[in-house]
Amino acid sequence: MAKIVVGLSGGVDSSVAAYLLKAQGHEVTALFMINWHDTEGTLSGDCPWHDDVIFAELVARKLGIPFKTVDLSKPYRARVVDYMFSEYEKGRTPNPDVLCNREVKFDVFMEEAFKLGAEYVATGHYCRKEVIETGNGNLYRLLAGTDPGKDQSYFLCQLNQEQLSKALFPIGHLLKTEVRRIAEEQGLVSSKKKDSQGICFIGKVDLPVFLQQKLRTQDGIILEVDAEDESYLPVITPEMSAEEKMKCWSKPYDFSRCKTRQVGKHNGCWFYTLGQRKGLQVGGREKPSFVIGIDVLHNIVYTGQGSDHRGLYHKALKIRNEEVHWIRPDLSIQPGDSLPCESRIRYRQPLQKATLYPTTEATYLVFEKSQKSITPGQFASWYCGEELVGSGVIDG
Image (tube, rainbow, N blue to C red; front, side):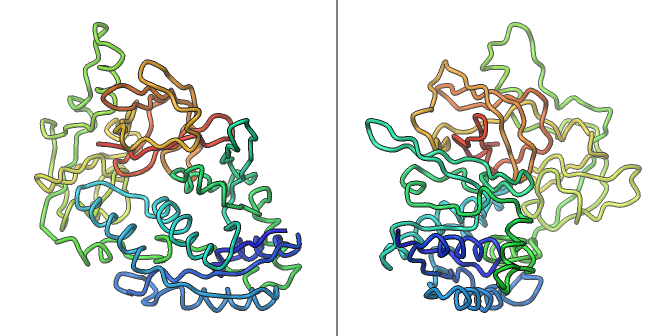
Protein backbone atom coordinates (compact mmCIF):
# COMPACT_ATOMS: atom_id res chain seq x y z
CA MET A 1 0.00 0.00 0.00
CA ALA A 2 1.15 3.56 -0.68
CA LYS A 3 1.24 6.89 1.10
CA ILE A 4 -1.10 9.15 -0.85
CA VAL A 5 -2.03 12.80 -0.42
CA VAL A 6 -5.44 13.71 -1.82
CA GLY A 7 -6.15 17.25 -2.93
CA LEU A 8 -9.40 17.50 -0.97
CA SER A 9 -11.35 20.49 -2.25
CA GLY A 10 -14.59 20.00 -0.33
CA GLY A 11 -16.41 18.84 -3.45
CA VAL A 12 -17.96 15.43 -4.04
CA ASP A 13 -15.37 14.26 -6.59
CA SER A 14 -12.27 14.61 -4.42
CA SER A 15 -14.25 13.29 -1.43
CA VAL A 16 -15.05 10.03 -3.21
CA ALA A 17 -11.47 9.83 -4.50
CA ALA A 18 -10.26 9.95 -0.89
CA TYR A 19 -12.83 7.35 0.19
CA LEU A 20 -11.88 4.89 -2.57
CA LEU A 21 -8.16 5.13 -1.76
CA LYS A 22 -8.83 4.65 1.94
CA ALA A 23 -11.06 1.65 1.18
CA GLN A 24 -8.22 0.13 -0.87
CA GLY A 25 -6.02 0.22 2.21
CA HIS A 26 -3.74 3.13 1.32
CA GLU A 27 -2.38 5.55 3.90
CA VAL A 28 -4.32 8.66 2.91
CA THR A 29 -3.84 12.27 4.00
CA ALA A 30 -6.14 15.11 2.92
CA LEU A 31 -4.52 18.39 1.92
CA PHE A 32 -6.65 21.47 1.22
CA MET A 33 -5.23 24.26 -0.96
CA ILE A 34 -5.89 27.91 -0.12
CA ASN A 35 -5.14 29.71 -3.37
CA TRP A 36 -7.04 32.96 -3.15
CA HIS A 37 -7.90 35.60 -0.53
CA ASP A 38 -9.19 38.67 -2.41
CA THR A 39 -12.94 39.21 -2.85
CA GLU A 40 -12.99 41.96 -5.49
CA GLY A 41 -15.08 40.89 -8.47
CA THR A 42 -16.40 37.69 -6.87
CA LEU A 43 -20.17 37.46 -7.23
CA SER A 44 -20.62 35.99 -3.76
CA GLY A 45 -18.59 38.77 -2.16
CA ASP A 46 -16.58 36.15 -0.32
CA CYS A 47 -13.78 33.69 -0.97
CA PRO A 48 -15.35 30.32 -1.81
CA TRP A 49 -12.69 28.40 0.10
CA HIS A 50 -14.15 29.59 3.42
CA ASP A 51 -17.08 27.20 2.93
CA ASP A 52 -15.10 24.57 1.03
CA VAL A 53 -12.56 24.07 3.82
CA ILE A 54 -15.39 23.25 6.24
CA PHE A 55 -16.79 20.62 3.87
CA ALA A 56 -13.31 19.20 3.29
CA GLU A 57 -12.53 18.90 7.00
CA LEU A 58 -15.89 17.22 7.69
CA VAL A 59 -15.24 14.69 4.93
CA ALA A 60 -11.75 13.95 6.27
CA ARG A 61 -13.17 13.50 9.76
CA LYS A 62 -15.85 11.13 8.44
CA LEU A 63 -13.22 9.07 6.61
CA GLY A 64 -10.85 9.10 9.57
CA ILE A 65 -7.90 10.55 7.66
CA PRO A 66 -5.54 13.39 8.66
CA PHE A 67 -6.53 16.84 7.38
CA LYS A 68 -4.11 19.64 6.62
CA THR A 69 -4.19 22.95 4.76
CA VAL A 70 -1.54 24.75 2.72
CA ASP A 71 -1.58 28.37 1.55
CA LEU A 72 -0.44 28.56 -2.08
CA SER A 73 -1.92 31.98 -2.81
CA LYS A 74 1.44 33.58 -3.67
CA PRO A 75 2.49 31.10 -6.37
CA TYR A 76 -1.11 30.97 -7.62
CA ARG A 77 -1.18 34.74 -8.11
CA ALA A 78 2.27 34.79 -9.72
CA ARG A 79 1.82 31.80 -12.02
CA VAL A 80 -1.89 31.91 -12.85
CA VAL A 81 -3.58 35.23 -12.11
CA ASP A 82 -0.80 37.56 -13.25
CA TYR A 83 -0.47 35.53 -16.46
CA MET A 84 -4.23 35.80 -16.91
CA PHE A 85 -4.18 39.60 -16.61
CA SER A 86 -1.27 39.80 -19.06
CA GLU A 87 -3.05 37.68 -21.66
CA TYR A 88 -6.33 39.61 -21.46
CA GLU A 89 -4.42 42.87 -21.86
CA LYS A 90 -3.11 41.53 -25.19
CA GLY A 91 -6.63 40.71 -26.36
CA ARG A 92 -6.14 36.98 -25.77
CA THR A 93 -8.26 34.65 -23.61
CA PRO A 94 -6.25 32.39 -21.29
CA ASN A 95 -7.48 29.24 -19.57
CA PRO A 96 -6.68 29.56 -15.84
CA ASP A 97 -7.87 26.02 -15.07
CA VAL A 98 -5.26 24.45 -17.36
CA LEU A 99 -2.59 26.73 -15.89
CA CYS A 100 -3.67 25.95 -12.34
CA ASN A 101 -3.18 22.23 -12.95
CA ARG A 102 0.21 22.65 -14.62
CA GLU A 103 1.63 25.31 -12.33
CA VAL A 104 -0.05 24.70 -8.96
CA LYS A 105 -1.89 21.40 -8.39
CA PHE A 106 0.73 19.22 -10.05
CA ASP A 107 3.73 21.38 -9.19
CA VAL A 108 3.89 23.39 -5.96
CA PHE A 109 1.05 21.38 -4.41
CA MET A 110 2.89 18.16 -5.28
CA GLU A 111 6.00 19.52 -3.60
CA GLU A 112 4.00 20.17 -0.42
CA ALA A 113 2.55 16.68 -0.60
CA PHE A 114 6.02 15.14 -0.92
CA LYS A 115 7.08 17.07 2.20
CA LEU A 116 4.35 15.13 4.01
CA GLY A 117 5.90 11.86 2.81
CA ALA A 118 3.54 11.22 -0.10
CA GLU A 119 4.43 8.75 -2.81
CA TYR A 120 1.52 9.86 -4.99
CA VAL A 121 -0.91 12.75 -5.28
CA ALA A 122 -4.55 12.05 -6.08
CA THR A 123 -7.24 14.40 -7.37
CA GLY A 124 -10.92 14.13 -8.27
CA HIS A 125 -10.44 14.64 -12.00
CA TYR A 126 -12.55 12.62 -14.42
CA CYS A 127 -9.69 11.13 -16.41
CA ARG A 128 -7.57 7.98 -16.33
CA LYS A 129 -3.90 7.07 -16.34
CA GLU A 130 -2.36 4.01 -17.91
CA VAL A 131 1.21 2.78 -17.48
CA ILE A 132 3.21 1.34 -20.36
CA GLU A 133 6.28 -0.65 -19.33
CA THR A 134 9.25 -0.30 -21.69
CA GLY A 135 12.87 -1.33 -21.62
CA ASN A 136 13.81 2.29 -20.90
CA GLY A 137 11.36 2.83 -18.07
CA ASN A 138 7.64 3.50 -17.85
CA LEU A 139 5.54 5.70 -20.10
CA TYR A 140 2.30 7.22 -18.85
CA ARG A 141 -0.84 7.67 -20.93
CA LEU A 142 -3.45 10.29 -20.06
CA LEU A 143 -6.84 8.90 -21.06
CA ALA A 144 -10.28 10.48 -21.24
CA GLY A 145 -12.64 9.87 -18.35
CA THR A 146 -15.26 7.15 -18.77
CA ASP A 147 -18.11 9.63 -18.29
CA PRO A 148 -18.28 11.48 -21.65
CA GLY A 149 -20.21 14.34 -20.08
CA LYS A 150 -17.58 14.92 -17.38
CA ASP A 151 -14.28 14.04 -19.07
CA GLN A 152 -11.70 16.50 -17.69
CA SER A 153 -8.59 15.31 -19.51
CA TYR A 154 -8.54 18.64 -21.41
CA PHE A 155 -7.74 20.49 -18.18
CA LEU A 156 -4.63 18.33 -17.77
CA CYS A 157 -3.37 18.79 -21.33
CA GLN A 158 -0.17 20.53 -20.17
CA LEU A 159 1.04 17.86 -17.74
CA ASN A 160 4.33 16.08 -18.38
CA GLN A 161 5.52 12.53 -17.82
CA GLU A 162 7.09 13.30 -14.45
CA GLN A 163 3.88 14.86 -13.16
CA LEU A 164 1.78 11.97 -14.47
CA SER A 165 4.09 9.41 -12.87
CA LYS A 166 3.10 10.68 -9.41
CA ALA A 167 -0.58 11.41 -10.16
CA LEU A 168 -3.62 9.25 -9.40
CA PHE A 169 -7.19 9.72 -10.65
CA PRO A 170 -9.32 7.33 -8.54
CA ILE A 171 -12.73 8.28 -10.02
CA GLY A 172 -11.80 8.46 -13.71
CA HIS A 173 -13.50 5.12 -14.43
CA LEU A 174 -16.79 6.19 -12.83
CA LEU A 175 -19.83 8.10 -14.01
CA LYS A 176 -20.80 11.24 -12.10
CA THR A 177 -24.03 9.55 -10.97
CA GLU A 178 -21.98 6.71 -9.49
CA VAL A 179 -19.74 9.17 -7.65
CA ARG A 180 -22.80 10.90 -6.15
CA ARG A 181 -24.26 7.52 -5.15
CA ILE A 182 -21.06 6.43 -3.41
CA ALA A 183 -20.89 9.73 -1.51
CA GLU A 184 -24.49 9.35 -0.36
CA GLU A 185 -23.98 5.73 0.70
CA GLN A 186 -20.94 6.74 2.77
CA GLY A 187 -22.75 9.69 4.34
CA LEU A 188 -20.30 12.29 3.05
CA VAL A 189 -21.52 15.87 3.52
CA SER A 190 -20.35 16.76 0.02
CA SER A 191 -22.72 14.25 -1.64
CA LYS A 192 -25.20 16.92 -2.70
CA LYS A 193 -22.76 19.82 -3.01
CA LYS A 194 -22.97 21.56 -6.38
CA ASP A 195 -19.98 21.43 -8.71
CA SER A 196 -17.69 24.45 -8.50
CA GLN A 197 -18.00 27.08 -11.21
CA GLY A 198 -16.02 30.05 -12.42
CA ILE A 199 -12.27 30.55 -12.26
CA CYS A 200 -10.26 27.78 -10.62
CA PHE A 201 -10.04 28.49 -6.85
CA ILE A 202 -11.49 31.98 -7.23
CA GLY A 203 -15.06 31.00 -7.98
CA LYS A 204 -17.79 32.75 -9.92
CA VAL A 205 -16.71 36.25 -10.87
CA ASP A 206 -17.91 39.30 -12.72
CA LEU A 207 -14.99 38.99 -15.15
CA PRO A 208 -14.82 42.66 -16.28
CA VAL A 209 -14.87 43.82 -12.64
CA PHE A 210 -12.27 41.24 -11.70
CA LEU A 211 -10.01 42.22 -14.61
CA GLN A 212 -10.33 45.91 -13.76
CA GLN A 213 -8.12 45.24 -10.74
CA LYS A 214 -5.23 45.43 -13.19
CA LEU A 215 -6.56 46.44 -16.62
CA ARG A 216 -7.56 50.00 -17.42
CA THR A 217 -10.93 51.03 -18.81
CA GLN A 218 -10.96 52.90 -22.11
CA ASP A 219 -13.99 53.91 -24.14
CA GLY A 220 -14.25 52.23 -27.53
CA ILE A 221 -16.79 51.35 -30.18
CA ILE A 222 -18.53 48.15 -31.24
CA LEU A 223 -18.75 47.69 -35.00
CA GLU A 224 -21.00 45.18 -36.71
CA VAL A 225 -19.64 43.48 -39.83
CA ASP A 226 -22.19 43.08 -42.59
CA ALA A 227 -22.91 39.39 -43.10
CA GLU A 228 -22.80 39.86 -46.88
CA ASP A 229 -19.28 41.35 -46.80
CA GLU A 230 -16.75 38.51 -46.76
CA SER A 231 -13.77 40.50 -47.99
CA TYR A 232 -11.88 39.51 -44.83
CA LEU A 233 -11.74 35.85 -45.90
CA PRO A 234 -8.37 34.60 -47.20
CA VAL A 235 -7.90 34.07 -50.91
CA ILE A 236 -6.68 30.52 -51.53
CA THR A 237 -5.23 29.69 -54.95
CA PRO A 238 -4.20 26.31 -56.44
CA GLU A 239 -0.62 27.57 -56.78
CA MET A 240 -0.21 27.95 -53.02
CA SER A 241 1.84 25.41 -51.08
CA ALA A 242 0.21 23.48 -48.24
CA GLU A 243 2.04 25.65 -45.70
CA GLU A 244 0.87 28.87 -47.36
CA LYS A 245 -2.71 27.63 -47.25
CA MET A 246 -2.42 26.76 -43.55
CA LYS A 247 -1.04 30.24 -42.81
CA CYS A 248 -4.03 31.81 -44.55
CA TRP A 249 -6.58 29.56 -42.88
CA SER A 250 -5.21 30.22 -39.38
CA LYS A 251 -4.58 33.95 -39.65
CA PRO A 252 -6.94 36.22 -37.64
CA TYR A 253 -9.40 38.02 -39.89
CA ASP A 254 -8.82 41.70 -40.69
CA PHE A 255 -12.23 43.38 -40.50
CA SER A 256 -10.90 46.94 -40.88
CA ARG A 257 -11.70 47.03 -44.62
CA CYS A 258 -15.20 45.59 -44.25
CA LYS A 259 -18.54 47.29 -44.48
CA THR A 260 -19.49 48.01 -40.87
CA ARG A 261 -21.90 50.00 -38.75
CA GLN A 262 -21.52 51.17 -35.16
CA VAL A 263 -23.96 49.33 -32.90
CA GLY A 264 -22.61 50.13 -29.45
CA LYS A 265 -19.83 51.23 -27.16
CA HIS A 266 -17.58 49.46 -24.67
CA ASN A 267 -15.03 50.34 -21.99
CA GLY A 268 -12.12 48.21 -23.19
CA CYS A 269 -11.86 45.54 -25.88
CA TRP A 270 -9.65 43.41 -23.59
CA PHE A 271 -12.75 42.65 -21.48
CA TYR A 272 -14.26 40.65 -24.38
CA THR A 273 -13.48 37.33 -26.02
CA LEU A 274 -14.16 35.77 -29.41
CA GLY A 275 -17.53 34.09 -29.64
CA GLN A 276 -18.92 36.07 -26.70
CA ARG A 277 -22.65 36.75 -26.84
CA LYS A 278 -23.67 37.90 -23.37
CA GLY A 279 -22.60 41.26 -21.97
CA LEU A 280 -22.36 43.10 -25.29
CA GLN A 281 -25.43 45.27 -24.62
CA VAL A 282 -26.14 45.38 -28.33
CA GLY A 283 -29.87 45.29 -28.95
CA GLY A 284 -32.31 45.76 -31.77
CA ARG A 285 -30.60 43.32 -34.11
CA GLU A 286 -32.46 40.72 -36.16
CA LYS A 287 -30.21 37.93 -34.81
CA PRO A 288 -28.10 37.65 -31.64
CA SER A 289 -24.75 39.44 -31.84
CA PHE A 290 -21.44 37.61 -31.34
CA VAL A 291 -17.90 38.94 -30.96
CA ILE A 292 -16.02 37.95 -34.11
CA GLY A 293 -12.91 40.13 -33.75
CA ILE A 294 -10.92 42.24 -31.29
CA ASP A 295 -8.58 45.04 -32.37
CA VAL A 296 -6.44 45.88 -29.34
CA LEU A 297 -4.43 48.54 -31.18
CA HIS A 298 -7.52 50.63 -32.01
CA ASN A 299 -9.72 49.37 -29.12
CA ILE A 300 -12.46 48.10 -31.43
CA VAL A 301 -14.80 45.15 -30.87
CA TYR A 302 -16.21 43.62 -34.07
CA THR A 303 -19.49 41.72 -33.97
CA GLY A 304 -21.59 39.72 -36.40
CA GLN A 305 -25.22 38.70 -36.36
CA GLY A 306 -26.05 35.04 -35.81
CA SER A 307 -24.05 31.97 -34.79
CA ASP A 308 -23.58 31.15 -38.48
CA HIS A 309 -21.73 34.39 -39.29
CA ARG A 310 -18.72 33.43 -41.41
CA GLY A 311 -16.41 35.61 -39.33
CA LEU A 312 -16.81 33.21 -36.41
CA TYR A 313 -15.23 30.28 -38.24
CA HIS A 314 -11.68 29.22 -39.15
CA LYS A 315 -10.37 26.19 -40.98
CA ALA A 316 -7.13 25.96 -39.00
CA LEU A 317 -5.22 27.30 -36.02
CA LYS A 318 -1.57 28.11 -35.43
CA ILE A 319 0.64 27.25 -32.46
CA ARG A 320 4.13 28.65 -32.02
CA ASN A 321 6.58 25.76 -31.93
CA GLU A 322 7.87 26.79 -28.50
CA GLU A 323 4.28 26.50 -27.19
CA VAL A 324 3.78 22.92 -28.42
CA HIS A 325 3.69 20.42 -25.56
CA TRP A 326 3.76 16.64 -25.90
CA ILE A 327 2.46 14.61 -22.98
CA ARG A 328 3.87 11.67 -24.88
CA PRO A 329 7.23 12.92 -26.26
CA ASP A 330 7.78 9.54 -27.91
CA LEU A 331 4.79 10.26 -30.18
CA SER A 332 5.94 13.74 -31.24
CA ILE A 333 6.31 14.43 -34.96
CA GLN A 334 8.74 16.60 -36.89
CA PRO A 335 8.39 19.09 -39.79
CA GLY A 336 7.35 17.25 -42.92
CA ASP A 337 5.31 14.70 -40.96
CA SER A 338 1.61 14.86 -40.09
CA LEU A 339 -0.63 13.34 -37.42
CA PRO A 340 -4.31 12.55 -38.04
CA CYS A 341 -6.04 13.12 -34.72
CA GLU A 342 -9.10 14.43 -32.96
CA SER A 343 -8.88 17.83 -31.33
CA ARG A 344 -10.62 19.93 -28.70
CA ILE A 345 -10.16 23.70 -28.43
CA ARG A 346 -12.29 24.21 -25.31
CA TYR A 347 -13.62 22.15 -22.42
CA ARG A 348 -16.61 19.94 -23.24
CA GLN A 349 -16.35 20.59 -26.95
CA PRO A 350 -16.98 17.35 -28.85
CA LEU A 351 -13.77 16.05 -30.37
CA GLN A 352 -13.22 17.28 -33.93
CA LYS A 353 -11.37 15.45 -36.71
CA ALA A 354 -8.16 17.26 -37.60
CA THR A 355 -4.57 16.83 -38.76
CA LEU A 356 -1.50 18.22 -37.03
CA TYR A 357 1.21 19.68 -39.30
CA PRO A 358 4.49 20.87 -37.74
CA THR A 359 6.66 23.16 -39.86
CA THR A 360 9.95 24.89 -39.18
CA GLU A 361 8.08 28.15 -38.50
CA ALA A 362 5.01 26.97 -36.54
CA THR A 363 2.67 24.05 -35.96
CA TYR A 364 -0.78 24.01 -37.56
CA LEU A 365 -3.93 22.12 -36.68
CA VAL A 366 -6.17 21.84 -39.74
CA PHE A 367 -9.76 20.77 -39.15
CA GLU A 368 -11.97 18.64 -41.34
CA LYS A 369 -14.78 21.12 -40.63
CA SER A 370 -14.24 24.82 -39.88
CA GLN A 371 -14.39 25.56 -36.15
CA LYS A 372 -16.33 28.27 -34.35
CA SER A 373 -14.51 30.85 -32.20
CA ILE A 374 -10.93 29.59 -32.30
CA THR A 375 -9.63 31.81 -29.52
CA PRO A 376 -5.99 32.95 -29.14
CA GLY A 377 -4.68 32.19 -25.66
CA GLN A 378 -6.79 29.08 -25.21
CA PHE A 379 -5.34 25.58 -25.42
CA ALA A 380 -5.81 23.24 -28.35
CA SER A 381 -5.42 19.58 -27.40
CA TRP A 382 -5.08 16.56 -29.66
CA TYR A 383 -6.06 12.97 -29.04
CA CYS A 384 -5.20 9.64 -30.61
CA GLY A 385 -8.20 7.52 -29.76
CA GLU A 386 -8.97 8.05 -26.08
CA GLU A 387 -5.44 9.23 -25.27
CA LEU A 388 -4.57 12.91 -24.98
CA VAL A 389 -1.06 13.09 -26.43
CA GLY A 390 -0.33 16.81 -26.78
CA SER A 391 -1.49 20.41 -26.64
CA GLY A 392 -0.46 23.98 -27.33
CA VAL A 393 -1.47 27.60 -26.84
CA ILE A 394 -3.45 28.95 -29.79
CA ASP A 395 -1.61 31.86 -31.42
CA GLY A 396 -3.22 34.83 -33.10
